[in-house]
Length: 250
Image (cartoon, rainbow, N blue to C red; front, side, top):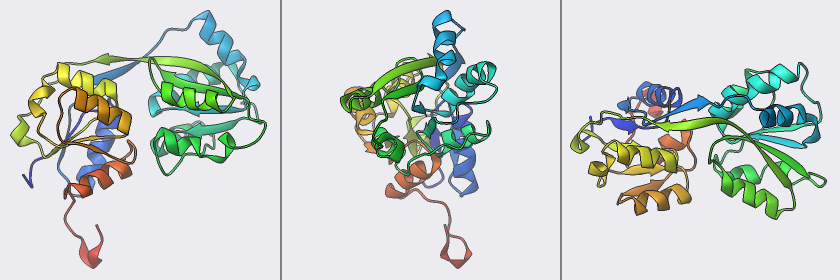
């Protein structure tokens, strides 16, 4: 099994970036996206919400896809972004995507909802209105946690997830599987992933782990997030690491 690849299921371009990061560290990996993300069409409600951007204290992007599809609307209606907004990203890849739009965003070391909720702007007094930029059906737990703090949360839903039929390798030809959301788990099952029920399955949160177990996966491990660093940590716990380099570095 030492030469078997890690199977990465997240949508592109994240799947390819994860595979590239793993391979560059000597860990064989294979991208088989089982979901794709697609922009939602402009509606009058979407346009009106973007035009009220300056009403919000904090704007949270939940994924690179949220940046890719959400910033095009914000840039269209706001040649200069409101100065007082605190911009937050759920993880490092999302923060880097915002940097490409010349926005300095904060992201947590713990790339889960729990880590983001601990960021200073969401702890500051006077924060009342939060805009959550996301895809259909995502991050309801985050919204509920913010509302429990007395904040008003509105949702800018800018993309949809669609299942893809992926040709999967045989279970014995896979060292471990990486699934980054419950939707990815469901799409994996729809592509025949139930045959991999005995392979180690790495997921980014306890909620996704519970969902995966209910779908029949028996070796589910929770990573500290969905990014490359979290994936490397999760794989290391399984004993899957790249070859040692000179000087003892990995």
